[in-house]
Length: 542
Image (cartoon, rainbow, N blue to C red; front, top):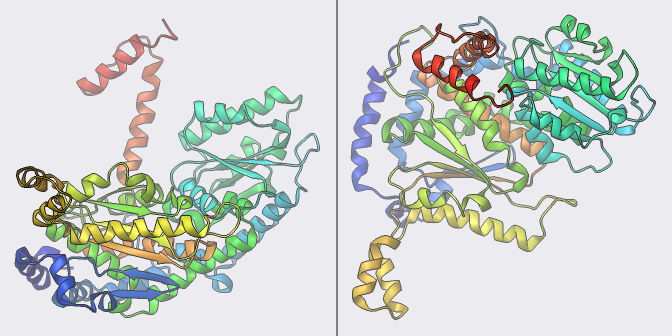
């Protein structure tokens, strides 16, 4: 494939970017009353308003031409057909097969049936610990993709007080100890989530959980209190997990795409089997849209191309994701792994150094909290940050939902922030407002520059009909496919993570030095010095 930055379309986009200095989003809206209708799209129950992006018709025409030039439609077909799109590890990235319903591979359908059996029994109170008491607390021990997705789905969709309480522990040490202090060993089940069954943090927590059970019971077999999701069933069984409680992981499902697999078992327990099936169905809806919609009406492709336009041609190196429903608070962390682990690459699929920037730093949090924290930077900072606002038309039903008035306040704030980022407030407008309040002319002129907002800050607004398992599945699949599209344009492999792997290996090699009696000299001066200092000042050993 030709180098991206040397293509005629890329150069045309660079030329087009240079015409943008004379444009402002405020003026584009003033000159086109139909801009919302022109630049909004509905798909799978979601509304995407992308009218507040730095685009005119020529921009989109060039971006879609670039996508076709990079053979995006063919690459979408390869992904969805389960072809080996993970070029470095020579395997498929077939997470879409996990939500394909009756068309899913038999092994996927068998795993789902096994998940449903355990989840149904746990929710019915018919799963017992070794003393005969029903399990009432489920603790998921996993990290990264083994935790972020299930924790998000549980927070967003679990509102059933009758279900077992589901907890997630990622970091070893204090978090688990603090949780265990609140639990009853007789009624607690641990789910160990590790593809290799050797993930350092997860196995430390699993051993600590086993030691805790050992301190509570006079027994040698704690299998009734463990389940596992892993590709190494033999290692899980050796640890003490009974075979009927071992669920599969497959090498063609990456960790950050694994919510839809048995990794989602804690979420299924929390939300119920029907709700989990609805979440899978929502994701499948977006898969079908991604496969069949022309690029101009393809929501994941459109989001990806807009993001690339801002990142590569305007130098906007970060992006904020701001969900307004409090139940979506874990979403930015989930998307951080999805996007930054997938797109943080420096070479093309053929191993050549990229000639453009790839990936962006993703950050964010709930809108109500963000307005009182980092929104000041979004409005007046010198580095524009594109924003994805996410909200729901209808408040969530049930005891955890908002009343209509609270929901209206939330929507008003969401829409106000996106409008203000687009429009801004000129110094002249600010000065006139201050004068209208009776302020002296000299003081109004002095304060006006401080209160002016530049505007022209791009954003998308995604509206869900309501926050349900199905709409959550649709939303997450949308972002998965957005990520894939950008990887295709940049010609990078979205499905490996060698930086993560090297970090794990180096940590493993450093670990013995913390118990060594001599000063280490095997590493760089900084690493050697940090190890030595931390050992010297470890007060537990002094």
